Length: 329
Image 1 (cartoon, helix red, strand yellow):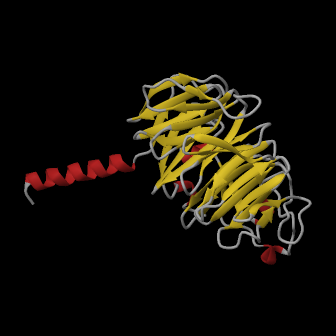
Image 2 (spheres, rainbow, N blue to C red; image 1 turned 90 degrees about the vertical axis):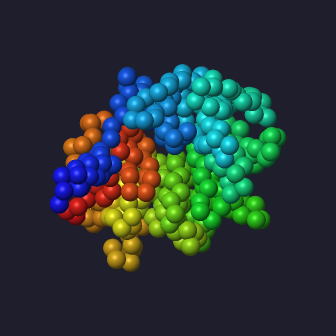
Image 3 (cartoon, rainbow, N blue to C red; image 1 turned 135 degrees about the vertical axis):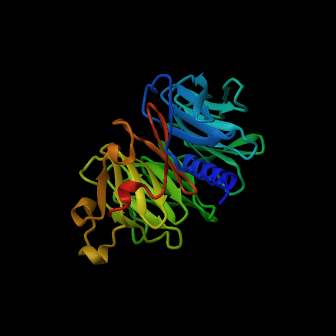
């Protein structure tokens, strides 16, 4: 083999190593609060917590914005416009060099606390508020969509259904109006807890994260949720969930990262309504060191292809799937 061929092989190996290396983007100063927003935007990432929002690109922090109040959620529309929910209203950001613009809503308080946002199948913007329910933006006009309050979470599942998490239960959009799941629900419309704090839509279904329980609605059978009470101990809040193809799920919790090997099946575990996952070896905690992460709260997760993105107050971390921490399960 010629020296030139050997050189090309060496270069290819080096390039391959670079593409699979873990990446860490460290912020100049930690976010004032654990991240509540992690979104891809303009060939980079948006990372926000408290009043601070960063745009990260090319493995470094590029631009910082100070928002009028703590950021509570965000979405990017098809035109690339970023919509943010803050404690002081809805904020729009049209480009990385633009200034945040506050957008009034048709409520008594024109700039209410915006707690959640989603885009539906028609790419219309839904905005949830703490005290004024949900508003829908169609074209350039707004209209009330749901009067329930407080709203804690909004999401759209793969089948195009809009879901709203509130303090009085879970609302599911149907052609005939809103279907409600709650503690008072009957038949297949019950939930173990009325306070729905977060909704995470994954390709295979919807995670409903409540103050004292978790439910999972399979996308092909949303009237029959799988329920389990908590992971680890009561009050262990779950901040985010990401699927690990062929390896279960990774959850960001108050107790750190938890790997859930599979969803619990009540038939296999005695039909317990309040299934404590840790007791059945379905889940295990992952130490920060096992993923080469700093010892800090990881509260936002994302997956793009074979890459896992984890966000904490100090920055954004990229790891190749499957994580080595799961290799010896």
